[in-house]
Length: 291
Image (cartoon, one colour):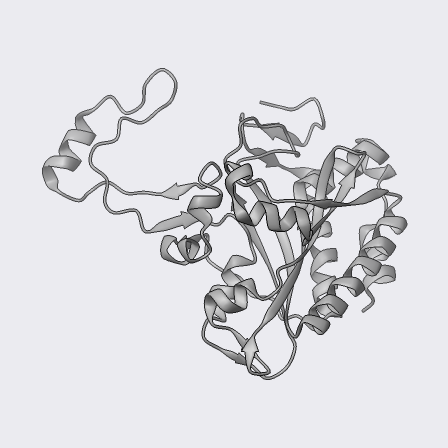
């Protein structure tokens, strides 16, 4: 269904289809954020869509965010089971599939781009501060959906730094300064706002209390309502969890994350639907992030 927000946006109830000028804007924004990675000497890595459930379990993800997980599942490959499924009607009036017996579920659709980086570096000793950037299509279930703002699948670009606490904090501070310059060049304004992750049953989750007492997440909030990105200091949580070491101890880490569709929404809110009125993304990125 074509959205009223822009003629190049189609809405499928929980996911967006981008075409024409919006797809071009998506790519230009992602290239700009990748340029931040280049400024931080971060090589780009492309990871698969699926992430092992065993790896997410190490992060206590299923206890903390069961409401957000999207699982990749398959039918058990028993001929009788497959035959029963094949003879069924397919989907019901609500579009729901009548599943028969499932094979063990071992994979989850990526909920955050940076998780793959920590899995990839598991067990390694980092001789120096390390940066990596990646873009992923991420999946998070929500209680409601809205075009370019709250989607089941969406694009996320992240730049991640790992090393000592001091190096990671300096990396995040440089990132904030550079992002501020980029925002100014685009004519966008955000409020940098301390935030907590959307834990399930937050009042009983000790991680929620820890984040309230010592915030580790700062969001870029557009028009006092929409977080279009965030800066996150993870302490040494991922280093401890995945055995990533630096200078003889678990590595500290942090990330700068950008929700690409939400940045598109911010551009539309401020500059309108006409591409001729949009700012020059590449020029703004060069000014903010350098060569």
